[in-house]
Image 1 (tube, helix red, strand yellow):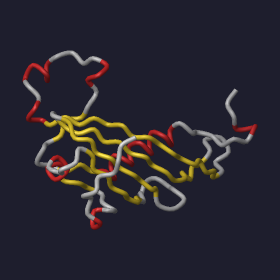
Image 2: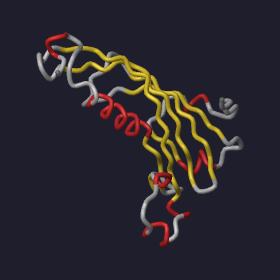
Image 3: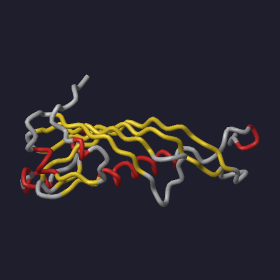
Length: 152
């Protein structure tokens, strides 16, 4: 289990975007942040609680997250609203653009090569990352649990 970074400023406790350079310059290899997000296009029962951890690597960052909340969905069969509790784990790898060679950009992808390229001088949009995972999760629940709505 990773230990929290003692140098996380209190003012950074509910952020939507983080500066990549600030994370990579932290004294500790792991930085943690807490956030709450609400989304215009995803219906939830209150804000989604997010716990983010950033692990510095030589060529980028790995972002771990835990998203907790409750999705308000509409059944594809009966059109009634229903709720799905969520407890999602995020594990995304970001590689700094400067660390990629031309050969890296041209080679065929292998199973360990799934990462996003990130500008070290840029920002990482945590709210957007959470939104992507919530959208994928909502697509996994097209119908409610009523027996007549279950697909055979």
